[in-house]
Image 1 (cartoon, rainbow, N blue to C red):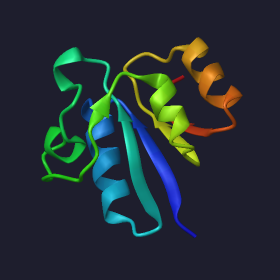
Image 2 (image 1 turned 90 degrees about the vertical axis):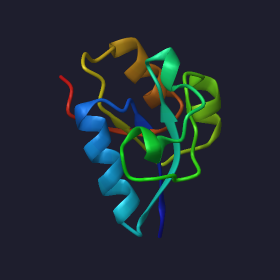
Image 3 (image 1 turned 135 degrees about the vertical axis):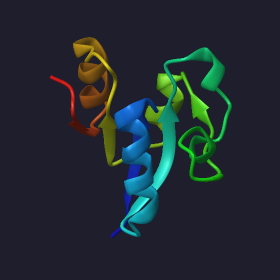
Length: 99
């Protein structure tokens, strides 16, 4: 089985997460949330220093949830409970380094 993953942000922890997801054949990176406007539309792999992955970062939460990911890897600097509730409410699992 392949798990569809959305990465939430590409900061210090998020970059490492993207690398780990990209290297694991059981995972398919299908989307990425970009908090910073200047990252929107850019390839996630390039944002994380590993070369293109064919996935563009976005700040459109509805579009990310429409991808029907199995899990969101949630790595913002500060957790937003409302965001997390929205993701979970869409039936998507979350793993996180945030409290």
